[in-house]
Image 1: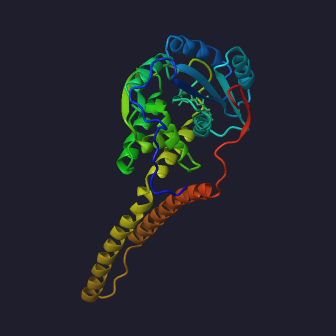
Image 2: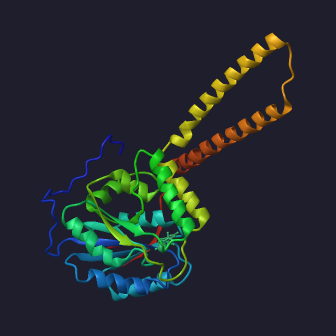
Image 3: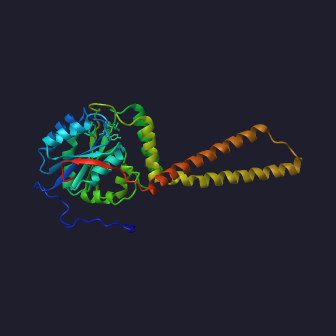
Length: 332
Ligand code: UDP
Ligand code: MG
């Protein structure tokens, strides 16, 4: 397991251009959490886009601890359409875990994670597949227009990408969500990553492979509410940064070094002044300001260590990423 490298190759290394004779299978991975109203319209829109294609499709829905009638809707849909498979998780594990569950059970030649609220428009699927047929292993769907998101969400997302890409070694592409096509080889690579806290956008970028990009306009949600509040998004951003960069931890070496150097110089100044002008009682204000400032900096540094330590703790417990309660349809 701890091999220094991972070699993922197809059993029969054929031509890179994929077969177009209907033998290739593509799975849509759909994480759902309280989306009873979105499932019907989603299936209609998706079928309209995928039915004309030559590939064989599977639809893997991962019910991420919904408390409404989502599971019932999914089971009904599964009875009507054998291409559908439903993985029911034992509780809400979050979108990243749900997507991981879907990818883990998918044995198709390619997978496309897609949101059920039609914000990832199904008419882009044929474009993704077209690039995949050309031989690309990853096809990203990039949002050219985010006006369906609120102003605050647009600003904070853009700031997140900038900060993340500035300090993380592995850059994640701007305005690309989880909606993308990944080839079997990429799925295998993702499966081989042992981490429990899964920031999928980062993991997708980390595994690499030959990548193409298609562009689309992000629509409004068709039904229900976004599951990502401001606080959840903030934590998601922290997860991304701490998963892929240790710069916030290491910067304290330099902050500490600069403050120590300045303190040393200031110490020399005080000693020199005392020797020249005799004992002087320094100002109360400067003392208080420096104590408070250094106290704040130290707490910040400890807080950041805490962020990483918490994640190390979560990883080291080695709990499973998700628990499957039951599966409906498919081979499971
Ligand atoms: N989702 C999930 N588990 C969660 C939260 C969301 O499976 O804990 C699913 C949700 O049902 C949807 C997708 O993730 O299919 C994207 O969620 P949402 O539309 O709320 O996110 P946004 O588009 O606002 O970023
Ligand atoms: Mg959405």
